[in-house]
Length: 471
Image (cartoon, rainbow, N blue to C red; front, side, top):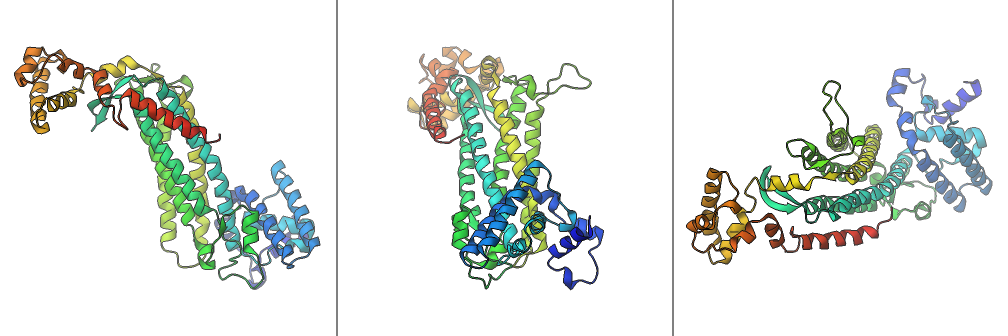
């Protein structure tokens, strides 16, 4: 590094004149963030240009300074995009690196850019700008996840599978109905994400270090230029608030829990013990020792990655819990978990949607599994209630019938009519209509139920909703 560049870097450290010795190399590496926060460079330049435009409009800097800043930032943008920009550890973070390079390029105009702001409100604004952009990129991925599930569901409204409680066969359900449960989860995640965006989209810039500034800033102008819904109204809160990051991380953790539940079922369904589905080879791996293995590694990794996202949420909450007002260096630790949360969620949603779209369903295996657990027992109880029995009495009658079927090793529908009538005289020949899997399915023709007619209505509702979401 030349002497002039070294001197320039020192001048970029606003506190350097106060100190009598340089920062140690260990402390420099320990406190620097440039090698992970540089991903916010575009947000930093965007915010700086809006700030500079406002300073010029307010007469705080001249038109020539604004033009120089705009020219310099255009060159810096080109350098970063082309990979020619030199990120320097000595300059600590993305903000000082860009400001130092701007000053190299345009001189005093670059030094005037920081008028009326602090890195405290600058970084808070940059994180919000960056996160808002990532939120807008995640929303279509959530829609794609739902579309993939709906596309499979459309083909399997009549496919019967066992519904489980306590991992025991409970009642027959449509496979499409089962998949639509996840569509509902991801739809709620979409709503949460949209709600989070509202609180992300408030501008801290203008709060300066913590108390505002003596310069006549027009904060609303900057907010409008950057597409914010408004400003943060308390300067102390503006620079120290990270609720928006916690809230986003909470959304992400909940979404990854939904992903993990789906992944867990895919792993189970693909196992030989279930055999409900198969996955394309491109989403599986083999074994180094067992040549017969096809392992659902993508689903297993998605399930595992939910842990890191939940962990990041816990880390961020812990990071904030002991901080007094206002800004503290602790907050440098908010970025890596937030960045990794976004990266993990984005990549997981993308690959899970692709994998779900390639699922091969095995209806016969599902139907056979539904026959194993006396899944129509509740239907028999409902049948007796409709014949006039109180439900608790009907429940007791069916329990005896199931016990008999268990002893004989047959399904309820295989018991002869005279045997069934022995449990209650109200049972007639029409009982076999309710003891079939599809009879059970069709009987649940209530809003939100598993009857194919209801499932098709829900598929239509989801398709109409998703059609309004741009990809």
